[in-house]
Length: 268
Image: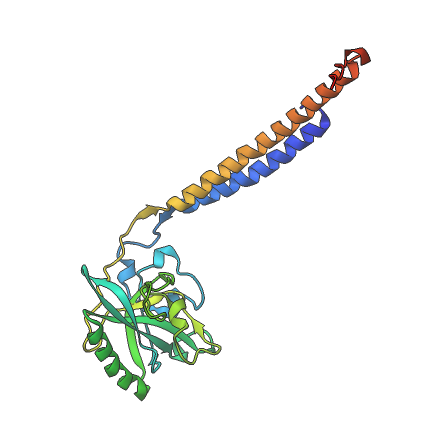
């Protein structure tokens, strides 16, 4: 282990372990999610374009931020999302594609955001509300929408035997697959849970997010992994050096062994 070759290998392992240790420290820093916003800041309504940008993930402190924007509903893009609970009661959400007014965006490309408009206890009520919304969407009027900005829940497969178009999670990525007129469209990754519900629907229960900090156990797990990798770098150096030493010992013993010391082959 004191030979130059193995000292050089040790220095290389030190560099690798240092990189792994830095990655572990970085993961630990991300494990504690501290909300830098002052208490009640999420309740101050802000312009959507000032909080998030199309195609970008919503930073953790801004989840639940109340925002406002304006645009028009795209006809035929009102989609029902099942298995939505409102104050503990299971029901349905009616969602729509809001094509944002170009004056409220920072890009010249068409931009949309998925909006959860309201909750219905039955699918029949949800479809009746959609009929009313389609009438207003056909007029193409610009409307103001205020609500909470929520992260994408991620798409999942529908229940076995259900319609393939059935949605059980509020996922703009999944809704995009059912929307019309999406060529060259910019879409926000989070969705907007409207504060006010249209006729025939109940307002979605969406309380303010809790202030303070939380612990992301997944990041802690990753930090432990990097610590294990750093320790493995030293073990690998030790194992390689020991294997080389044991091989030299075997070669030395073979060289010292006299020809007469070789065991005679057994008679067959």
